[in-house]
Amino acid sequence: MQSITTEQSAPAPPAAGWYRWVVLAVGTLGIFAALGLARFGYATVLKPMKETLGITSAGAGIIASANLAGYMILAAIGGALASRYGSRVVAVIGLLVVGATLLLTSTATGLLSACAWRGITGLGSGAANVSIMGMWTGWFEPRLRGRAAGIAVAGSSIGLILTGLAVPRILAHSAAGWRACWLLFGAVAIGMALLALIFLRNRPAGASADPSPQKRAESIADLYRSPAIWHLGGIYVAFGFSYIIYMTFFVNHLQNIGYSTVAANQHFMLMGVCSLVCGFLWGAVSDVFGRKAALVAVFLVHTVAFALFGLTGAPAGVIVSTVLFGLSAWSIPAIMAAACGDLLGARLSAAGLGFITLFFGIGQALGPWVAGEMADASKSFSHAFLLAAAVAMLGALGSLLLPRRSPEGGLR
Image (cartoon, rainbow, N blue to C red):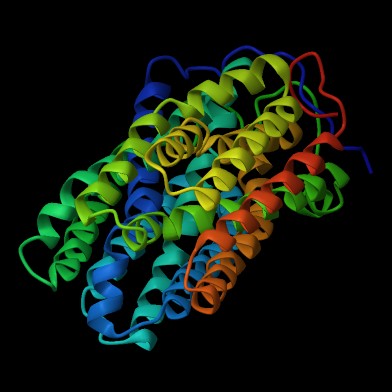
C-alpha cells in the first residue's frame, strides 16, 4: 500500500476563480447555523432552561453530552457520505435537520425530551460541519487552505456575537424566553440550509475529484490505516474535552460568581468578537510554519485561558481568559481540516476529517458530563476549568510528537 504523504505545492483548482469565495461565504454561514447556533446557543439559554425544567448542573451536562454524542456519530459517517455523494447534499440535509430540531427543542418539557431533541440536533450539526469543512481542499491550494478553513470556522464566532446580543433581550421579556430563542435559532438554520442548497458546489467546474498532482490514499481503508490520521485523532480528543467545558459552562459560571445575565452574555459576546479573527490568524500560522507548530501554540494558549478562568473570578482575569480563548477558539478545527486536506487530498479530506472528528466527539461528549458532576459535587465550576486546562496541556504535548512539517506546511 502506498503511504499517505503530503501534496506538493499546486496551483488553484481549475475554474475555481471568484466563485470559491461565494462557496466559502455560504459555507461560513452554514457553520454559523450548525455550530454557532445549534451548539453554542445552548450556553446562552442554559440557566433559565435549567430553572424552568428543574434540571441540575449534571443534567445540563447530560443534555450537552447528548448533543455532542449525536455530533460524533454523524460527523464520522457524514464525512464518508460526503466523500461518496458530495458535500453539498450532506450539508443541506444536515442543516435542515438542525433547523427542525432546534424548533422542537423549544417544546422540551424535561430532561428526557431535551436530551432527545438536542441529540438529533447533534446529528445534523455533525453532518453539516464535517461536509462543509471538507470542501476547502477542492477549492483552495495548500498555501491558502489553512486560511480558508480559518475563515469558515468564524461562523461559530458570528453565532457567539449574535446570541450574545439577542438572547438577553429575549430572556428579559419572560422566564420562558429561552423557548423563543430556540424557535429563532431554528428558523435561521432553515434559512441557512436554503442558502446552501442554492449556492454550495462540491468542487469547481471542470475539476476532478482530487486535483492534486500527487497520489495518496486510494480508499477509505487506506485512510483508516494512516498513523498520522490516528495521531491527529488522539490530539483532537483533548481539544474536544477541554474547550467544550469552557464553552458550555462559561455563562453559568460567571452568573454563579456574581455576574448579571447581561454582563455574563457580554463577556460571551466579547469572546465571539475576538474569535472572528482566530481561524484566519492561526490558519495563516499553520500555512507558514506548519500544522504541528500551530497546534502546539494554540493548545498552550488554551491551557492558560482555562486555568485563569478556574483560578480567579477577578474582572481582569476573566477578561484575559475570555480574550485569550477568543483569539484561538476555533483554530484547532481549522488546522485539523487543513491537515486532512494535506494528507488525503480533495476526494477523501471530508472522510478523514469525519474520522478524526469521531475522536473529537468522544472528548466533547465526556467533557460536559464530567464537568457537571464535578460542579454538583463541589458547588463550583472552578475545578472543572482546571481539569480542562490540564487536558489542553496534554494536547500540546501530543502535538509535539507529530511528525515534523514539510516545506509546504503539511504533515509528513
